[in-house]
Length: 159
Image (tube, helix red, strand yellow):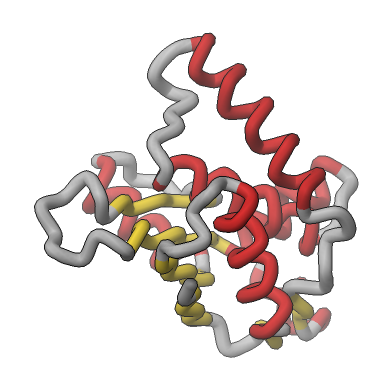
C-alpha cells in the first residue's frame, strides 16, 4: 500500500515515516491494505479555499476527504485524498485537552472513514456507526506515535 504525504506548511516539521506508518495502520485496520492514500497537511487559508470550492462553505474546517472511488477514475486502488488543516487541529487539540498527535490521528481516521463510505452527516444512526468505527480504529493504533512537531514560536504566532 502506498501513502503519499504532502506538507504545505513551512513552519511545521514532520515525522514523515511516523505519519505514513499511522496511515498504513489505519488502512490495514479498515481492510484497505491494498489501497493507496494521499494525505495533505495545509493551513487554514488553503483549507478555507478548498471548503468553499468543493463544499460551498466559506470557512475553514479540520478535515476534508476526496474519494476517488466515487468517480469514474480507472485507478481503483487509489482510495482518495485526506486534507487536514494543522492550525485548526492545533486549536481543537488545545480545546479538547489532548495532544496535536492525537488530534491529527483522529482526523486522519475520520477522513479515511469518509473515503470508505462512512458519512456522519447522513443521519444519526450513521453518525453513531462512524463514531464506533473511529474509536475501534484508534484503539487498533495502540499508542499514537509522534506524527508532527511544530516550531513552537512560529506556530503560536500563526494561531
